[in-house]
Image (cartoon, rainbow, N blue to C red; front, side, top):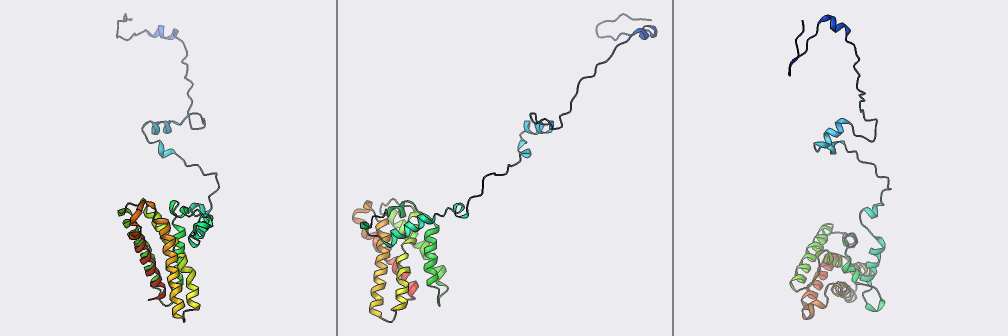
Length: 237
């Protein structure tokens, strides 16, 4: 029994006709991508990347470059610090040093080292002075910075912090002299005044520029008082 096919109908054949039917079914060439092909992403990788989760599959490559030295990591330039120390200790323009580098290229580690050194020589008998000197350095520099900005100066807080810190070097230089001639009051007083003037001149010559014009004494005076206070912390007066 056989029905004629119509659109949308199945075709039924008799059992005798079915025996005469023969053929083969070709199997598609299916290959599983298990990630061995480096040129194509695996299916899971493609799935995650299409949905924005590709970062889960990222693997950080090891840095082949050699690690930088510790001084470079901390941004410490010993040659630059040494040059700035010489600029502060020898502030005379006739010596030919480019002293503006202390102001124009400020750093943190050099001034901090100078302040800590000044604190170390002030330790004997008054250990609490160390933290107080660092505090005065930070907030005293902030006061000078605010005053300089009010007077029309173009300086940053980092520049003021660096200059004030480096300019403590003259007080460190006179410290051994005060220990030797501490019994001679007149000579000791003269050395103290010399050290304060030296430090104040080194700082003021860098911070007080031509933009202050007639207002220079308004900034030089508080700088001078600041170093008097630093010296008083050392001498215990």
